[in-house]
Amino acid sequence: AQKVTQAQTEISVVEKEDVTLDCVYETRDTTYYLFWYKQPPSGELVFLIRRNSFDEQNEISGRYSWNFQKSTSSFNFTITASQVVDSAVYFCALPYYGNNRLAFGKGNQVVVIP
Amino acid sequence: SQTIHQWPATLVQPVGSPLSLECTVEGTSNPNLYWYRQAAGRGLQLLFYSVGIGQISSEVPQNLSASRPQDRQFILSSKKLLLSDSGFYLCAWSVAGPPIYEQYFGPGTRLTVT
Image (cartoon, rainbow over all chains, first blue to last red; front, top):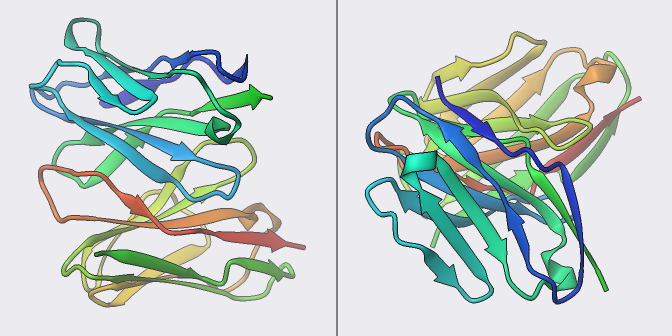
């Protein structure tokens, strides 16, 4: 069965510090996608990235970067030079193949202190 | 572009009253549709999902029900609300799969049952 573990519950950083969020997953699928979402205080979940298991290259988008390591079943997310607007809950997710659902982790609460 | 709407944004209802939350999607056809609940804490609980008109899969036994009367309309209902139904309700859509692609979320409805 699919499982996503986000062990860190709440992480506090001072503005401009970097923060890395860990996501470890379990799947029996040989090919799969992985996702990260951001949930700001307003509540709406915002899709950040989709990564195919075929592609292990790191991804960078502005201050966000993702490190996918299939060998350790991890898909970690780093925010560089954090800003107050980065304060949110971040979710990692993995599809259940064939039945249209996503398995979400419990989320990481990031608090950026000005 | 695709847009997802949810209403109402907030709702306060007494115990035992009925509930109807509506979700509509624009700009896509034959989407998969999902209802989630986020109670105290951060976890996302999948309540229902639908792959087509009239096709509803229930994930958790409860006093809630869902219907999909039109291709891009998804309704969450209850005949009699319980205190435990309080929470943040999120509707989401995705492209029909497999493979399972990312889900896009609506702004959510905050329900308080008193």
